[in-house]
Length: 196
Image 1 (cartoon, rainbow, N blue to C red):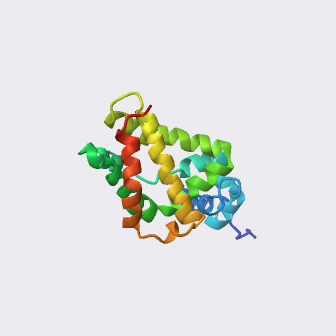
Image 2: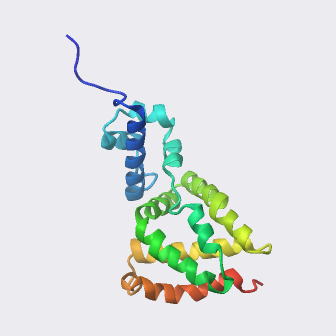
Image 3: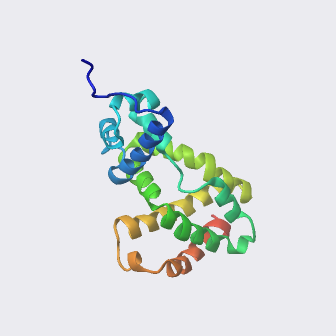
């Protein structure tokens, strides 16, 4: 008599692969890189751990494939186009109203994983350098373009950390529009002022 228990692949490889990735993103967001195991991802996705390894080879590769920047580079390209005198406000609005609002889980995953694991931090750094920093270099003239972009990104990551993870008051409860008003001048300075 055949054993009816099923292990390994679920019917339809692409459905299983996407289910694994969705589950991995959720677990990396909630527990970070070190707190997420291949076995836990497999259990939550309803597949055998061997299938996770079949598709991705290792936890590091699973993380790399699940790594999504919290924005499409084309969206940032649109934000960067236009009058440089209002660039700080446009970027603050983009982060507060789009990235931190609509894609908070992705940002949580990136922050939690990158601060607890050097390998995860290196993967994130490469992804950011290849997209956001490369775009800023194209739009901002001068040799300091990368530094300007890094200052903006670090400032906004600090705002996200204070508002959404540490929940420091009164910043955590401030209306998004008020935060934009407060943050935009600093971003504008990073982007256009002379850096000594």
